[in-house]
Length: 301
Ligand SMILES: [Zn+2]
Image (tube, rainbow, N blue to C red; front, side, top):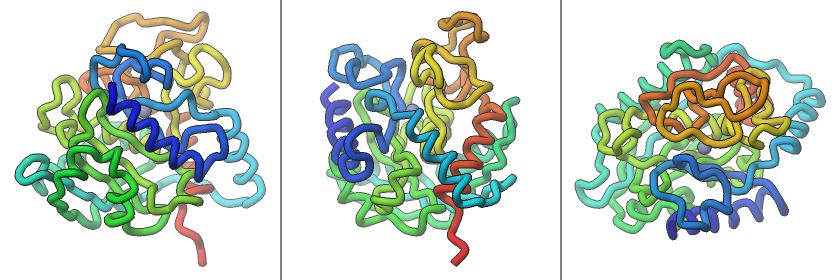
């Protein structure tokens, strides 16, 4: 639990710079523990991501659409994301192989390409570099050392995904920044995942590489499917049925909101076990491409 609070404090510091005074610039993956209140109770018994008390979906969505209208920019059909992969380790711990990195990239491309049965979001990932940092402090407490780590290792512009692997540990599997943060804090932009969540890793129930898929979803601008519970606007995506709470495991027939279809337990932006996750929706893909046009496409100049 302590680590969760530390994560939140780290995020709060970034939030103060990027989103005065509300809204979360960063979010993380944790099992069935949405929100700050639960983070400060002893309910966190399993790993996955957390987010602060809801990103301000309404405000972020309004700003996205206003900027899109004002800028009159084209929304791409395909997006190629250059990935700079930063492996943190403590000696041999966490020193993932190049083959594991490649498998993580392949998993991303399969997930975002819809090969599990979901929509093809149009997003593809290309590994452009892999570097290794043997640093016990960074490796074991990446949230506490987030600014130091990223200011040393972050490379590239707003379209470049800086992906870090470390022992995120405790009850958190990974954490990410939202695209909006990039404007004010470009070096903090990026995604951190627990190395044990990578394909073939050792994290029980969460070792198919879908923590990176989920966190990068946030980096690309999509919210949890349980955002705002049953209340509008939910996650600001029309084709993901709302759900009152995050999913734990892989329940069949989970249906927590009236009249909107069963809960999207197989969606990558829920908290289900990796084996349960398999899809993005067309609406999520459309949102990602809109967000990319506004916040991440390389500038023309
Ligand atoms: Zn998340």
